[in-house]
Image (cartoon, rainbow, N blue to C red):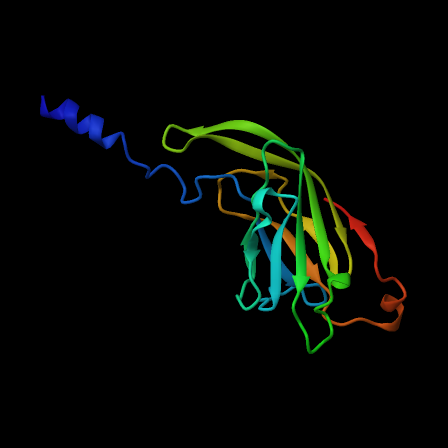
Length: 173
């Protein structure tokens, strides 16, 4: 009788489930000129039109990556990046960048340990290009596997030719 009880208690663990129990895309920040990871410390990042519009990152936090909560009841989620770099004159909302992800939300049974969740398939990305140079989607299928799927490349310096193009719209997956 001891053996069946041990089997029952052994099957109720979460060791087969990754730490990330939800499908949240991980977005990393990079320098477009060097391709190296950058840490931002004067950035406010929050959802646009999301319930509560809460900030995901507050100015003063040092971040090189952030998880983005996609909404499952709609086919797109938008995020605003506000740069709080006063000395460079970039704390003006006119320089805010908006990133909009268009995706399909699909119910997905991950495993008996993790249960069911949504996974997202990114179809398209639209973004302004005030400080963002480009965005790369490394893997458009977002599951609960901890993997950086989105890379945002920032311009850290501009040339005179670049100044003629402000503001720009960009898109790409």
